[in-house]
Length: 67
Length: 455
Image (cartoon, rainbow over all chains, first blue to last red; front, side, top):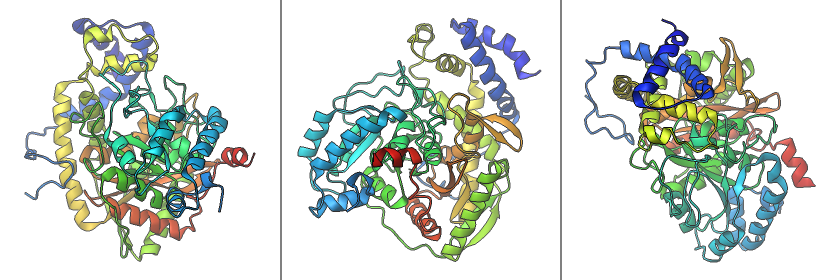
């Protein structure tokens, strides 16, 4: 399904589930954000990362330890 | 001597130290220039002359003794809480001593004003702020870049010679590029960060300098790092380039200017250019956005979202509410992409010293409609800019944007990224590039600024 199509269902349903209200402008902003972000999010969700060994105690100020 | 305000940051510091420039006169001249020139660009949202004079009176001898500095509205000051460019930043704030403030004070600098910023730090354009947008000194109808919009515009307009910004997803490098400055995003954790409302939570945000050239950025960065970033000669620089949308889906003038700059840098350092591959880059861009957005959710509750300040922009209100819907599974995978990207970069940096690509793919877009025309079509500036800006924040590596050209009278920037802890190499490389192009781009002054400072 196109992101713009799913936005009509997904966003109001999610807002209702969280108990969050939104006006028309905010809904339009969320719809636009959904069109931009949702397709790559679905691509990311489709990625199987189970084989990625975690980086223990990762320290972003340094290179990851050599495996 | 040139007009004191037109001296570089390190020239101002040297002249004061040598007794050739009175720091009080420099401060008063800076305040006067802000009063005269700032209304056109809205870079500085607040000055506090008495606080600045008190700071100068108590200033110790140090590497920035008496030098006026603008600090982004992201950092608290002892007399002022930060507002994050917003009517409501959904986080507790109070006046206080942030790390950057303490570093500046202890170096003898004088905080002369607060720099505007994009609302909630949420865009690369700087076109929305509770104070009204900052404007680009090269063309006030164009975006100054964000989110450190005011610090960049203030330095470009020569209101001050140096400013402190913050970079969570490119927020120092985007405005540095749009305003024709040198902007350094430090290695994660290397620059002062305490006192930031996201300190200890954010894994992407760092403080950093925005200055006219790399020499000034080095001086100001050394203060923020609490250690001297020593200059060195670069020789045999191995420059990595990538054949990817970040370097290919780029407006032609930007592509040409960056290609020339890379060749200039290679020649100046007797180095070589090598092709590299970063297949994780598209996923890394999304991962950065997901991580940065999820880390800022602490103060977000359904109740608060239903009672947002009425002066928050509709864009911010909508995006804050949309953040609640980001799937946790995607954020978990984003962290795994981070691990993959860090490992890939560690391998790449075995083979190259720096990675070079355009900081952003097009020059500053109009404030009213921040869209950019690229070979692939029309994109929002944010969607286009994040492709090149996110990787350094995701992985922790340092990056610098340096001015390398101009199109439509607007600056073009090249980004250099290096391995963790090699911030000094980036500054050395930037200085080598400045030497190679005769400092043409770092000494360029916006026409508006030249008119106003001559008046």
